[in-house]
Length: 191
Ligand SMILES: [Zn+2]
Ligand SMILES: [Zn+2]
Image 1 (cartoon, rainbow, N blue to C red):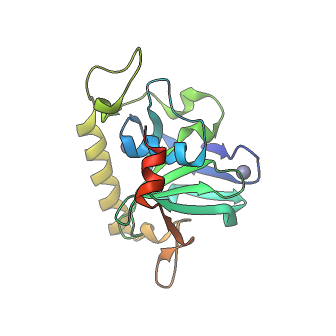
Image 2 (spheres, helix red, strand yellow):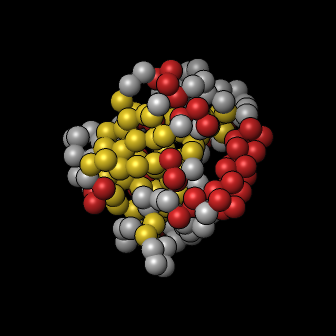
Image 3 (cartoon, rainbow, N blue to C red):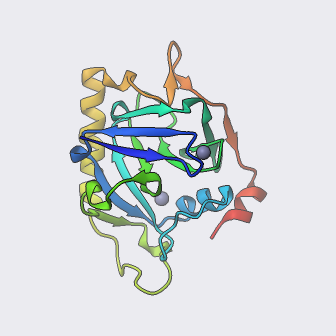
């Protein structure tokens, strides 16, 4: 079984294998809100959350429009935030190096039944959540950290970290040139 994802214009499609090993969570941090706001993408939950699905990069395969991948950083040392250049659909966050194999996919682009993502296991950075129905406190962070560490170690030890659509050999540079927001651009898009 795999999950199907698609950008809003349909030019870019990607799949996630073995979704049963993924971690489903919602992050409310200001940076996760700034990213789609800068793109003009309407993906946030009513409380300012970004619904995320974390897996190993080797589980992600682009089946169409892989060349549309674009890379944005909110600051020089920020997370690598990927989106599609065709229609500004947020795709995923990764760390800056392929050798730290981690991908956090935005589920707004998921096509199919929401239950295929499994239950939400964690709500993190809820101090930035807003509006009625927002979670009162963080939950599940330990689960997220454990899954992150377990996955990273397994991918490194197996060599599977080299299977990634976001970085390319021989030097494992990102497949798109990072665009780094100026402080002014970042402030303009902040929640
Ligand atoms: Zn598109
Ligand atoms: Zn976040």
